[in-house]
Image 1 (tube, rainbow, N blue to C red):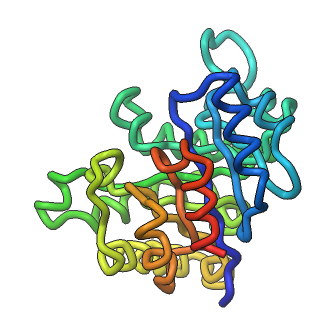
Image 2 (cartoon, rainbow, N blue to C red):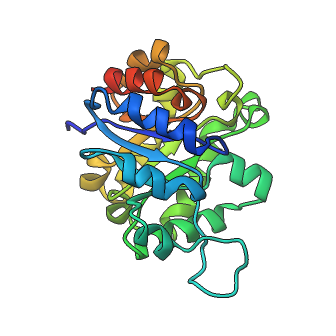
Length: 247
């Protein structure tokens, strides 16, 4: 099945009003050839929403699993929708590691995102220790199962799943195309066991030190449908080159 490639920028905790304005100007000089999402820090999302053109969408980097209310410092999904976001990253490895988000919390956030009409990019991945122990596929299977306990495959099809090997995020190390494809294939097989039709169309992204230099080879793999791009997305021209590789 032909799946349109999706490339999402994750600016993480980077940016300033002036730097963002320059990025938006540079990126707009040539429209992307694939579906594109820009996930910026919360305080800059209105600027990004206003500055994006065409079909390029804005996304949040996280959301609360709770409804609006007494949760100081958190951001409700409804708030993201109101300011113009269409996507949201859920369960990024840094949220799991630094904020203690469990598989159950990630699943609840994915459920919450879908409930307010956001398209979640749900992140999964193994640590270096887990890979070295030969447990990669078991870890991934457990993480996917947790998501499926809260969301159907059909619902997840509105968004995407991002495989991000923790050992390849911000380290300069990248899973080989074959390593990434092995995991993506396993994810799709697990989804297909629950809903074969939707699993065939659900987009699976790779995240982990993707650059313009390695994007085309990664995106050429049969089960890799684009990328969740961290550090390389901070350079508008580099990010545009990655989008071109996907297109």
